[in-house]
Figure 1 (cartoon, rainbow, N blue to C red):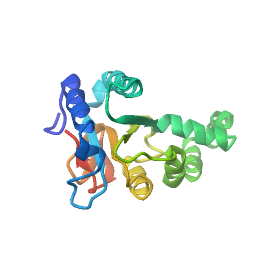
Figure 2: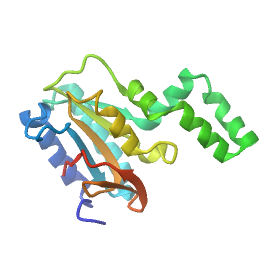
Figure 3: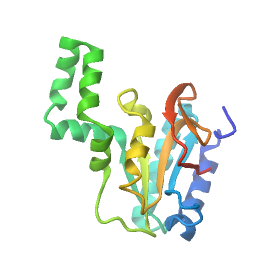
Figure 4: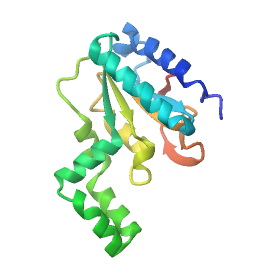
Length: 194
């Protein structure tokens, strides 16, 4: 565990709730002209707790218990939708069996590019001052997609609303470390939300 990770997920979600309800946060103020992108790093062993707290957060948003409108985009669900739209979802297992895992990975990376992911996550209209995009499922899409690639491609699309990446690992302000051990790439434009 690192200083950026806590073992008290409930406390961290309480902090997140307070943060996303703030007017400055919702309007991307006080960021020195940076995009309102944030990373919520957590210990990957707490994944099930994080999923439950995330579901509660989204439910509270939908019921009006939160001032923010939290829109969750799970990257695994986005991936499945992309494959379904490309009509390859039911062919993935056969492709892996016929050509192997490396060939499958290469094929999926050509179909589900970061640009395609971001387009699939987008919605209109964004409601600046109210919406918060919550990106989940980072660990579920490894290794065929990397979190830093999603964030880089999302900058121009979601620059008007805050984006929070739920990240099972460490973020030191420049590097993402998936599961606390895999170098997931450099990304220096996000803020640690905790």
